[in-house]
Image (cartoon, rainbow, N blue to C red; front, side, top):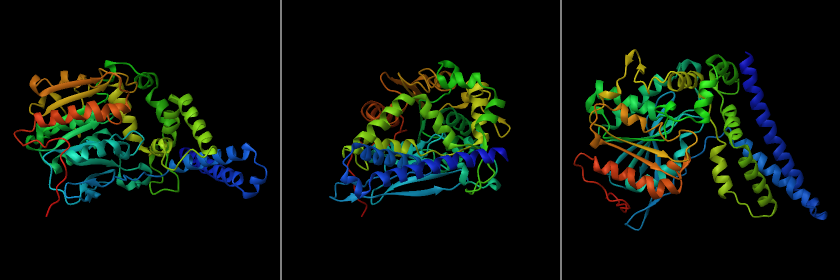
Amino acid sequence: MRFMAAYDLMETARNTNAWLGATARTMGSYPLTALAPHPGFKMLAAWGEVMERSFNRMVVKPDWNIAALPGDDQTDHSVVVKKELERPFGDLIRFKVQGRAPMARRILLVAPMSGHYATLLRSTVVSLLPDADVWVTDWHNARDIPVSAGKFDIEDYTLYLVDFMKALGPDINVIAVCQPAPLTLAATALLAEQDPEAQPRTLTLIGGPVDPDAAATDVTDFGRRVTMGQLEQSMVQRVGFQYAGVGRMVYPGLLQLSSFISMNAETHGKAFTNQMIAIANGEASDHDKHNKFYDEYLAVMDMPAEFYLSTVERIFKDLEIAQNRFVVDGHQVDIGKITQVAVKTVEGGKDDISAPGQCVAALDMLTGLPDSKKANYIEPEAGHYGIFAGGSWRKNIRPLVLDFIDANSGGAAPVKRGRKLKAVK
């Protein structure tokens, strides 16, 4: 049970830091401190506010908070999140725009299971909703899943994607962001072989490690350098007694977050220092740029241990996808079986997580797909997050992806970008 003790120790440390922050904020904000207008009191309160908010966000799943979309009937159409397919480890959810007719474009966003919730794609969803009906894979926090639900590794993940694509039908356009790119490619190949009628219309892979050896990064170097035994001993813990998944082996979100922050410790340290100064000067707000980013960035989820370990071993170390040797439920998947689905890859020129070359490698593996159905694009100045969120995505990448979807619509009438919403009477 030593791993469970380690898990609870981390949660205790998080809870204690949140309490210390709340205490400092309260002490620095006592009315009596106004009698001695020393800047130290304001800085103490500011430090406490940042600490309390930051450590409390680490165990909260963010809301989608999708704003209503304006329509040409002079009304705003609210967006409702609906579960269309429920599974123990993740749901297929739809962003239903109330009062809007079905759109010609139908898009499934495959969110990564890499430490953050699917809400990391909130801005991506917002940018696509005016032009398409949108679904997202909403993965669950492993700490909340009872041990009785069983395991969840990369084969199970792939089969989930197969089920989701079957449920949505062959006119769906799939966009896989980051980590799920190789598994989404495998799921599409599995459908092409076993259920061709259920294949998606198009597949867009954004910044994913289809072939990690194509370009080295700190992530691939780490995967090569560390043994599976070392990973299991240092990264895997048992969920503590506080959660429904008590006893489940996981790669804890708090441990993942420490790795995320350590990669850019100086940048994060400067950001938090600047926020404390802004709060002390009365220049910060509840939804300012800092809080909007870190409320999402600090909200982390536990990953099933078998999923994390099988990802490192089979995707990064053994290169099963890259070498077309991936096996799902006893069946070897052949990427070359994809012959009808148009495939586009998108990479960021400054991506330090999945470097240029790792994702575009998928196109060479599609030996059964004609070149006319293949496309690739590199956004020169974009980093990893910039290729699916932010200015590079909105201005350059998103229009190209929508054009690619329209060009391979199979004769369906494309919807003009920027089309205003029409209410259904």
